[in-house]
Image (cartoon, rainbow, N blue to C red; front, side, top):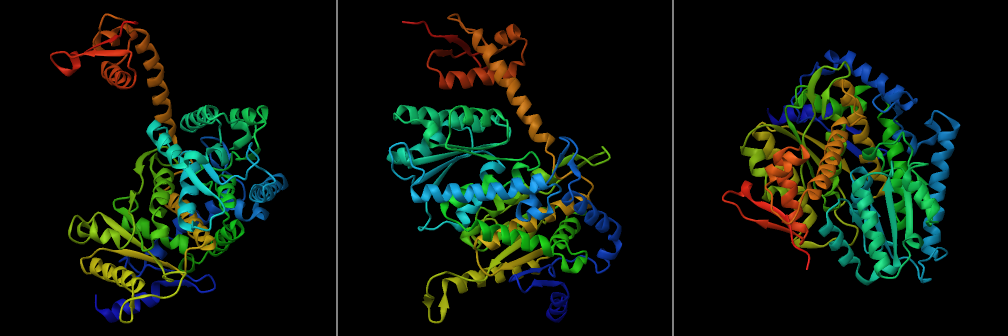
Length: 526
């Protein structure tokens, strides 16, 4: 396409929210000009579904729950006075608690101020706070933050090693809506043990973010933890960053939670507009639909050209793939929907997989995220008249052009800087785009049956592991022999035995002719 035609297309499809400093450019997506008209029925249905969701309709029929993350940044939208009061009271409680921690009114048990935060959660209960912390963090943070976001024992040890002798001055935030999430519980139990080993009372350092009445909530109350904050059942993990899940660590780190919520509210307001051409979230959803033929046939590669946004793609990976990766549509028909998301940051990726993006298989579209302000400090030139930021901008524009020359399509969004307001705005934009896209392809973006299936399968394996261990004795048995004794799958039993033998010195392995013939036994007690 000639440069003059591209310029005309740019003028037509460049959307700017000038008062926000945000822009979206979809001109390098080759969608047909009549697409919006042809999809008008689906678009209107998506707007209607979003309106019903914000009004408090049951949007997650699997769990019979409302979905209310939009109320978190505008409590006036809440469908009942009780929900509005809960949101507003929680925000005030968070601010007071953080102020008391910073001022030394709330201290560690040794009377010293808390200096560190250990945040224990998984999935959305950790990923949102991690992204925000990395995006906004600086040497001026009020408190340092560390994360347990898995059930990896070595991962726990690495975090404890980084905290080092700061454990007595560490505040622990445990996040689990149900209170029964195993990964989070495991992290909490290991933290309790570590505190006890240091002669510290865990309860004097602990805060809970959980559902009212959950097992975690009861435990925190019974043991007089420092504070408890609610996680409502109408908030899903992947959209929880503007609840206490994300706001509490933000406040403790000293970030601007009011600006964060204001940025999200401002983006929400503009993406409620029914005019497609003025609605950035709907335009994003329509571009995803166009790029993947409404079936997720192309991957979404997100390339933010800013180190502070390096975790943005990881955050979007969960938001998009957990929301849209569904086996069935709303009618119950098998559709296998979803969009794969990956990416890191520019210009780093130009030295890794951009080679394939330009010359390899065409199974993707790109979203570039530009941050116009290079740095917060004084300008520094690495060459006469040229800064490092000039290079970053040049690489971004150059890569965008080089990809388009080879027929690789892209979306570009731009913000002036990375601060709490714009991080909130970006999160809100994608939350609404995901909701719109779910309606366009007729799937429920607010449940996650695949995740629950994995949890159930893991629980069965752990129960099988107990049975397998009970059948071990001083006379060795193969996996197949033990499987017959417990009526289990031989392959499952084999892998459970190998895991046990790798971590329990009391279990002995006698090699067989083939690996599957290995014999497992309990070592004789001295």
